[in-house]
Image (cartoon, rainbow, N blue to C red; front, side, top):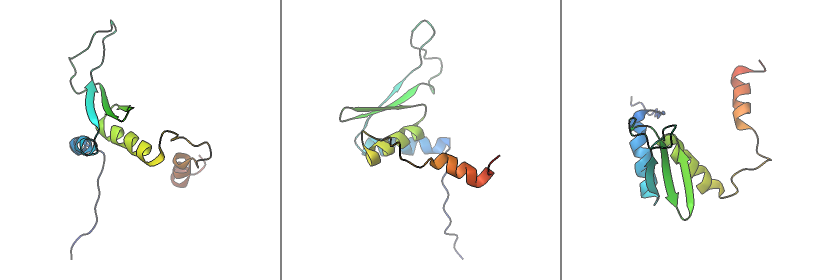
Length: 102
């Protein structure tokens, strides 16, 4: 019997597909290396910095590619007014379901 269960998790092997997905959606991608305390670019840690996606006057920044794709997805789904004070606090709701009122 075939196993039809599929799982995908946050791991380093998902970063490249996330960047490819953003590129295919038409975003200009970039990486801004961190700066030293003196304000100079620090290239000693090439895996660190802020990942950037730009499109149609909108810029998105994140510490890693999956978060960048997530931010873009929020904006694509909800638009410039992505926050809503009437939203249910889904994070708290899920935490309460798992951990209760502790």
